[in-house]
Length: 320
Image: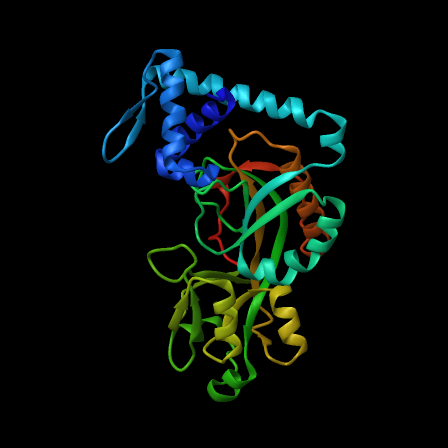
């Protein structure tokens, strides 16, 4: 039995609550993970996990042992990354999930620079607007705009997304140009609804002009849960969009979108990179976080820099 592999397998089963999920994230077979945990229990002469046909629960002894294992694995990673060769050239597989428009317009075009700096880091990029379970899916970090719904995450603010209201010329020619946000609540105007990860429907938006503040839900015939689909629907003339300016800029230059209600302001949306607080921050994750922060400082700067906050304290819904 390889004790390192066995401890790693045991820790992942505890974190995911499943032998199958643990095997998937470790790229092992379920049989191998099961055997490693059984061999570890035999060596320690204690039961670490209670197994039923439906679930796996850690025992009291297993919970105590898990705390030691997590620290031991973190210390081992510390020992490796403290070596000059690791510090100078971080390496390994890094799993990241980002919103689709951010990947399309900012992150992916800049990745040649990242790989030129860190050629030994393999980046597995998930592109989605859904809630990601970092433990179950073995994801190292996520980038999200607005509120992070998991309060257990640690988030570093890396930018602020300035936003506005936009519509396609074909929409404005057919429906007319709105002169007040309240017009979006009734015929003939409509918006494109953005659901994100909300099960309850499209999210509302807050608009400000001087001392006036309005919360607009809008009337929509289409609501989507993906940023690229949201943008495509607006360009197709299906309704008014709330868009970060960096997303709208290219389409505005090409005449595919026009900014409307320019005398009203949309609150900037904070952009965060988040990871689990109990996860050891490896060298490869640390350099990626710093690189993304520098990239966002160039394209979507914010007023304050580098503050780490609990993930549940932000006030806008996640989007774009």
